[in-house]
Image (tube, rainbow, N blue to C red; front, side):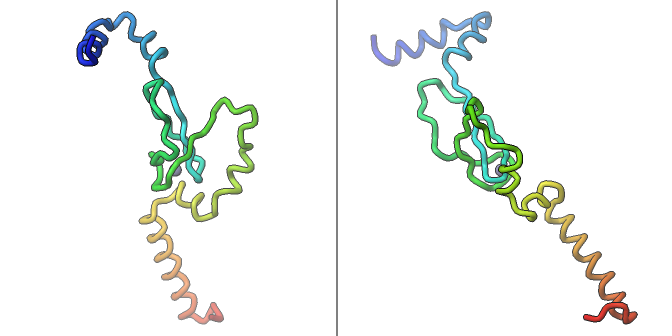
Length: 120
Ligand SMILES: [Zn+2]
């Protein structure tokens, strides 16, 4: 049997009734985790070689394979340590919002300075 015939018969033989079984039998769910602690779930064919690095879906960082069944998952505390204040800030605010806040604060500062309330 040639490869082509085999592939065609595989596709044709799957009915919707057995689809859930097929998914569990032939797919692997991999989880990747970036330095910001975002988890990205990716489904691979069970025989596919898992990549070492996957692009995080939530930020521009690269995510590394993360074993969700690991007996010693990283504590919440340690995952926070890896994040800078800036990264945590960016999770709550967009750069545009931060820019706006900065301009607002600068305006206030200049006003106070003009009134002689600030020494610098
Ligand atoms: Zn991320």
